[in-house]
Image (tube, rainbow, N blue to C red):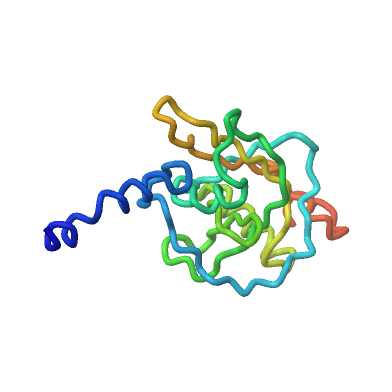
Length: 175
């Protein structure tokens, strides 16, 4: 019997693991890297209550989102909080990658096309990161009493120049 328990795990451990974090599956956990970024002073100036950019890859960071929100909620969440957009220079998949962090935890990335635009402007403006407002949506229980997945939307314009609150003006055509 000891061998079977060792191979398949004790039933009590399996039950406890399935209840952990509102039954969030362990395969959605991503080990959070240790970051040493300086806190950015730049802040995206944007229309209050509008969140045109949806972060991508947040399915991989559901455990972090559960930690940030405090766990599943019967009615789910639609909460606003500060996020940090940080250029990720060492990303092996995209040289323009921009990671989205909330409370020091990675919760997703900007979509590739938006990352190229935002990263390029950050580089021109001489910054590596900026703060913005984010809206977290999700976390309500599903029919199987499992926490619904979270999504992250960002208060960053989807097109054109971004005002990072640095006192700079929008460049004229050709500049």
